[in-house]
Structure formats: structure tokens, C-alpha cells
Length: 513
Image (cartoon, rainbow, N blue to C red; front, side):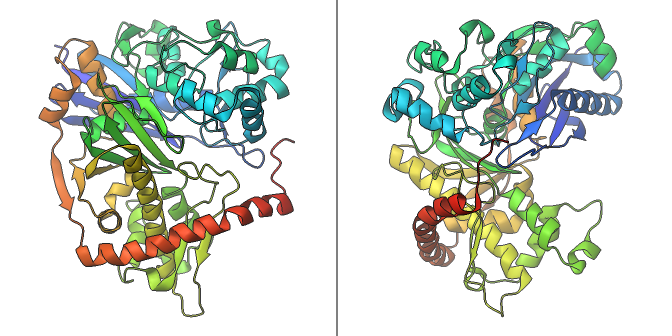
């Protein structure tokens, strides 16, 4: 009897494989980490082989925990970090390490695209701004700096597409990843000839676009040996981690949004109109008839990890145990500090910033330090500053027409009750925690159920399976206090914008070796 669904997520730091029953109950989790290379300033690369080996280890861990899991499995789908530039040759071999979403080396190429087509035209065509987060500028960088590799490129795959290719030998591309490339005509779904020409690309280098729940192939005998899966197991197209997280959180209709905090923070706001805004990101949802307006901050959990690794004291190190993660370790210290962090405001731009600033040159700032500032105040300032960055995205989305009545919080950051309460108080809306469902792999598993014909639609399955465990209601007095501090946060960010750019010129940020 086949009664198990496998959801896989390939994130920025780790791959996770999670087994679920048909009614959404979690059965087993496997996880494996991999490194991130930063060979020069603004560069962020990963080895596709590292992804594959981590996925293999994670799948084997999950299968081992459940009797006869491989034989009971209906199929699998993969969600992943996005977007990624990964060129493959005719034999399916990567030609270079992948440029992941964090990579900002192509800022000069963004300006070239704007000069060639106009920023307004690019936004009108693609529904998104010209920025090196999207792949168009990275493709142009690839054309200009590694033309010898572009000449050998047979196809480009995204992270989930590469893992699916290793599993099945079939190339695939989902609609959300296609939108994040910044090459697609949003109105027609066809690749823009002008943008392709500017990047030296052929549309044949991209796989056909298929819905996230579509069966693209079966696990091969070779992949079965590597993973422990049964040969012939169905593999669905999958999607990005954001759409999968929206399913996990139950963010499937306007008014209920999701925020996913791990290394970064991603805000996901469903809407039926296909709202676009040049300060945000717009993609199709995996739920038919719905779209997602996305806000994305670069460093949230990463800011806490930076603090632990760089400024963590001996007391912090002594309190560390294998069963406690960075969120537990640091946020419990921040609980003794009153809202406002003793006058310290944190700008969380440790690796530049995405929406709504879109400023590679932005840098992290602690404002308001005195000789009396305790370490715990810095930690709380990080929690508050990242929450202010979330509010900046929410306000931008609301101004564009998106609705928000309740925010669902998922990811590693949702483990901190203090952080969730700060977000509720900063935003002035309830922050709800869905019952633990295994993260983005839960959303990927729902795509398997839909593709296998086991459920009529995603919305009904989400309504039946997503349960709210806890709700953090906003405190009116703290919201008013935070609103005053938020106004200061916004002013600091705006006033420092020119200084960030000037500092980049003074200290040098040219990414090319």
C-alpha cells in the first residue's frame, strides 16, 4: 500500500527530506548541511554536487526512520531557494559553481539592462524590477565574464530542477522560478526576445515550464541506488521554498499572509489580482488563481548567527548545547530588555538589502550605543530591527493593494516566542504559529498529493490540514511605542542611503577579480 508523501526542500544552508501521511501527519525528517562559498565581495556560490549529496543523505535518513517507506511512497516534490544561475553542458554536468540568490556581483549589468531597455520597460514586461537578485543581470554577467562557459551551456536549471534532473534525467522548470529569472513576459508567459538577446541566451536553453504538481518523471535505477528510493517513484516539478512555505502556513487567499524567517526573512502576501510593485517581488502562487507579492530581507536569522559567531561572549558559548539553536540561545537573553532596546536601533543590512530598499551597498548599523549598553540590548535590537524591516515590506505591500489581517510565521525564527511577539507588536496584527509541519517540505508534499490525484485542489487540503497552535496578539501600548521607533528606523535608513553608497566608493566594492 502506498500511503506516504515525500517533500524535499533544498535551502541556502541545508537540504531537508520529510515524510508525511496522506492526511499531512509528519512521519520522519532527514537533514544534511552544505557550505556556502564567498570567493569575493558580493559573491555567493554553492556546489550542485553538495546539494545532491545532501539530498541523498537527507532522504536516506528519513527512509530509515519509517518501515518500508520506499515501497509505500507515492511520490516526491522539491522546493528550493531561488533564483539560481546554474549552467549545464550537454552531458548534464555543471560548468561552474551555482550563483545563488544572495549573489550581488551583477549590479553593473543591472545598469546596462536599464540603459538598453529602460527600468520602466523591464518592470512592465516582467512584473519585477531590474536587480541583480533576479537572473537577467547574472546571465549578462555570465555572458560578459565567462563567455567560454556560456558557449558550452546546453541548459540552465534551478536548484529544484537540478535535483529532479539527478533523480529522473528529465529537465524541468516551474512557474515561480521562471518568474524570478526576470526574462519572462508576464502577460504572455513567453520569454522576452529583447532580454534574451541582451544576455546572449537562447530560449532552448530553458526547460518547458510545468505546474508544480505535474509529474515530470520517475526515479531512475541509478538515483535509487544513491537515495534509497524505489525505482519508478513519481517526481513532481516542485516550486520555490516561498510558495511551499505559503502552503505550509495556510496563506492561500488575500488577508492571511506568511513570513518565513531562517537565514533571511520572506514575506508572502496572496492576492488574486496579480499585484506588482517595483519595490517588491511578484510571482504566481501554486494555488490556481492566486499570486504572491513578496518582500524579502537578506539577513534576519543570519544577523543573529553573525552576533553569536562574532560578538558572542564566553557566557553564551558556555550555555550552548547541541539541543539548543541560535534562536533559543540568544533570544532568551533579550527577554530581560524592555522594548526599544535601551535606545539602540539596528539596521539589519549585513549583506546589503533586498526589498524594499534594493541597495547592495547598504550595511548593518547599531545606532544609539552608549557605555551603558548591555550585550542583551544588542540582541533585542536585532530582533526589533529585523521586525522593522518586515514592517517596511508590509507597508509597501499594503500601499500596492495587498491585504493583511493575520500573519502566519514559519521557519526557524518562529521558534522564538519573543521574536513572534515583537513582530505582532511592531506590525499591529496577530502573528499565528501553525502546528509544526516540517517546513517547506510540507508544501512540496501537498503538490505530490495533487499531482497524484489524491486531493481535488490545494486550497481544500490546506484548510483540512493546517492547524494554528498559538496566536500572539499585538499589545496596543507596545505597538504605539514601536511605531515611534519604527519612524526613527525609517529615517535612519533613508538618511544613510547616500552614505552607504559613498562608503562603497571609499572602501571599494568592485566584485570582479
